[in-house]
Image 1 (cartoon, rainbow, N blue to C red):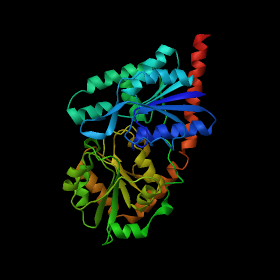
Image 2: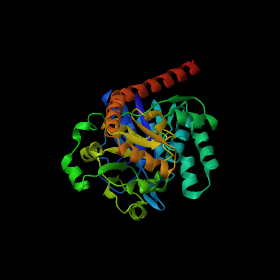
Image 3: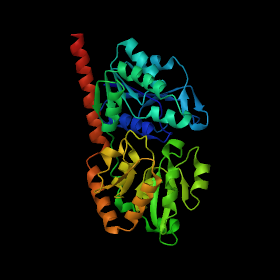
Image 4: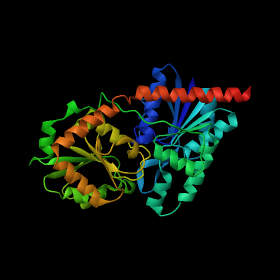
Amino acid sequence: MRVVIVTESFPPDVNGVAHCALQTARHLVRRGHTPLVIAPAVADPAADADAPCAVVRVPSLPLPGYPQVRVALPSRRVAAAIVEHRADLVHLAGPFVLGARGMTAAARLGIPAVAVYQTDLAGYARTYVGTGEGAAWRRLRAVHGAADRTLAPSSAAVRDLEVHGIGRIRLWGRGVDTVRFRPELRDDALRGELTPHGELLVGYVGRLAPEKRVDLLAGAARLPGVRVVVVGDGPSGPALRTALPGARFLGRRTGADLARIFASFDMFAHTGPFETFCQTVQEAMASGVPVIAPAAGGPLDLVDHGRTGLLVPPEDPDALREAVAMLAAAPESRTAFGRAGRAAVEGRTWEALGDELIGHYLEVLRERKAVAA
């Protein structure tokens, strides 16, 4: 198959959309298919040197107030690249701006399209501007409604899409690298650097942005014998350093370094209430670390409350603090949750999820062929 992946984000960006698009391209190449990626341009001209396939970059601008996020500008490159690649299918990753153009081009060219829902844009609109949810859903309905199939990462995301009038939905989760993220990487030397007095490490990994609500960890950070460690960067960094004065901020970490940090946590706390999936929860589980997460969105599917971790009411700092305190006082539970979490994700490899995705592609192509006949 010749597949064009139109994505709102791609490495060197670090986020769920970029990571999933990269893993999709890698898997298609491994299975003998021919992908092409279309993504917003980034500042680094050598950014795509290690990409698994050809990448077409579309002119873009940094999002005001959040320069790490770039928004594609109108460009004829999208349609031209799809035509030049002789695409059998267009894969729209987190479609909203660039993805909408990809959907328009695919429809005009008569090429089947699979849209992957990945970002709660309505929730982001509510967080950043206090309005605009309706406009976000209208945009999403227009794009996903034109696609042959929408793939949603969690049961909560499926329900949200259905409630807002989007159909032809299938559930498709995300893989996790259980070789890279594993309990054996726990590093006592690193722990000694982060906890000079032997505190328990409570980690957060992700963007430092308003919608992630990392500030909710302030109460947990004040618990005796607890050290909060924050990994990531973003516009909320300065404010969070003030809100969490006792926390350690490690900045952006990737690859083997990130895996070592994950495995060295005693528990992992995710705070954002708008996750359609939440890949960092899976990475913590693969690392054998118990998880505390909001009982909303993607974590509802990932965290088995009382077995692999704890689910708490969203945006409730007291509940989050109490959950941290409870696990801090229960080393046996932490060990049991960590082992159960690792076991739960061992079969969720990117290879397995990639093959499942290819199955969706083939079904869409067969359906189109049947209609044409």
